[in-house]
Image 1 (tube, rainbow, N blue to C red):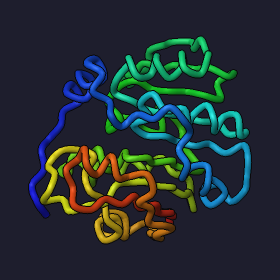
Image 2 (image 1 turned 90 degrees about the vertical axis):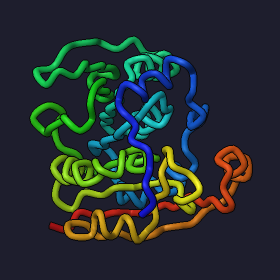
Image 3 (image 1 turned 120 degrees about the horizontal axis):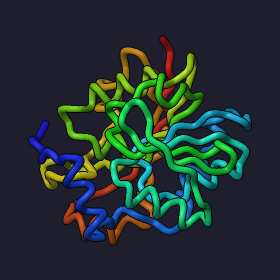
Image 4 (image 1 turned 180 degrees about the horizontal axis):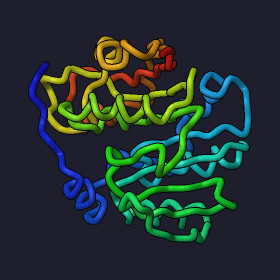
Length: 228
């Protein structure tokens, strides 16, 4: 695999502080809307984990769909912005793990601010599902194994991940979001998970392809099931 740049947590926080957040959208992700039932099997009241959630509108939308949602994000600025966008005034507390916890909606919406890779089930609990939008693609290549281990440890038996990620020729770009192919996911998750490609979508990516200076850009959506 081509070498990629290593991005620190402090660099991610600086991007938020400087408004360098071109990945943000001001609407609920269309793939989450379309494939939510594939993630939840049509059930409500599930515990859903959203890693590297940023200032996403998806979390409150999932709460409104009847689920309990827990996010984690390095940038406290992004976390506060998310609650502001949702019109919520969260309670704030410190955890024994060193994360700052924000809670609203009678505890049905929780977001931990801090290092995602140091979270444990003792701190945040366990989950039925994970909504991963560009999160695995934001993780440094050297930390992907830790990321998969974390996901495995937080997911309940037969838990599911809905993952939406960019896929392109990695030699054309060295910074996140990194390219995530089906083969990469199978090699990363395959020992303990079943990886299913749901769709390949290039809709509305022409502008992003030009900004990223790529010859081709797709968004791949996968369902990843915990099997052991």
